[in-house]
Length: 545
Image (cartoon, rainbow, N blue to C red; front, side, top):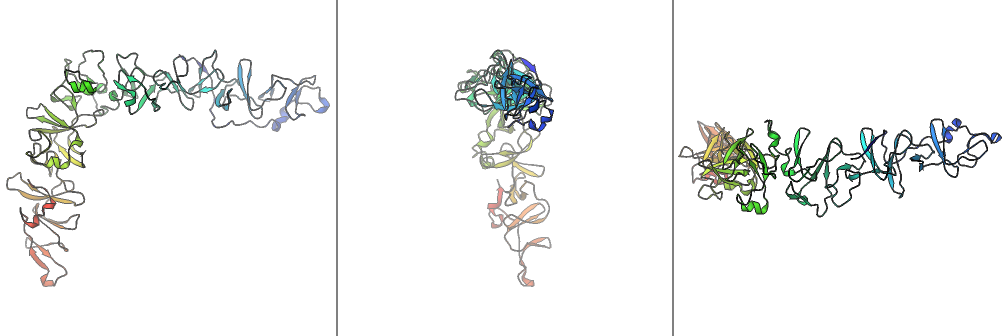
């Protein structure tokens, strides 16, 4: 363990702030004039300050005080200035005016002529180690490390206070002192200088070179959190959130509780991402992130592909179903792996297949069952589960924007998680149409689009806006391309490209030309669009199956 001594003061960086010049306060000195040269006191007749005894001899290698300040006389009898000196067992600093530094930081040259920070206590002595070892001292509520020469140290250190300077010191080090010298305590450290071969974490089951970031945490006593062995990771709660640390003190990222179920309200939510079963212990009602054995999945075993598993009260894993865990619903495949993204559950509610959200385009969801590239989309119910496996893989309900392979699209899911319009059927909910969960909305640049409502069999065309809402009532709208869209009794009538807005007369819609003679302004009647007619404008149709 590092040994602690006490001290105090305020750290000043960049340069040493000098005391007032000795000449400016010479009235305080007891030096003698030439007529009393045999009186003991200060003398500057030679251009350097000296202290003469009553025999008129210069005092050397000794301290003298003037007012509240102490001064040191070197072996030549001259006052020492701007220098570090060793007197007895103490190391001292004399500033540019010769005043002994006390209760302050000093940036000065070390024995190798390098810039170094020192701290000088109330007695003027530098805080330092002894017997060849470094020691910590508390200064203004923080701890700093000093070697035997009084130099403040930074970096990684082991439990004995020895500097760890190998290629990857984060592994064996127990303490860390930052660039400002302060010891890390109750503090995270992001280590970004990973060497070429940083090694392997037994508990994390990954090479450190594969980590996006390496995080370490140092407790209140400055000691690094780390597992005591490779049998079980160490779980510690930090600011109300639980984390796991491996045998080298590295936070295990794929097992971090903080990045997991942070919105859960159940009291045991923190264990959701908190286990690695290396000890073989049967755990009930437990989440574990691990690699299936070769019997469960030869592929995952060979590739070391980790997945989340959840055990039941008897210790067996939940599999081949959607199950509620801590108030949230999750999907599990036939061997118990938690699934994310789009999931299709078959008619008997067993697991069918899963797809990553960026595997498909918007058009893939609009394709009928016969031509759909999405296998089983017509044979089961479509669900969506959180796509960030490490953050939250629970079921998503309501409307949600999904980033597909080609674009963002809005999907709608019922309270039970099933996609609205699942199994390639057209469905309407809250004034919007859905097909395979995809909301049928107009392109934002067009503002409006039309679709064929085939739910009643005969099919009627309606207009929807860019949010998927059906346009209700009787309206004449202008789309994003400057064309007119006529809606009557919530049904689509036609899309026309007249310069003038169409007019309604006697319950019917007509083309209108304001530039024509007053008697010729009313044009032909605008009739309802039907399949095969030009005024249907097939390029404007969103959905017509």
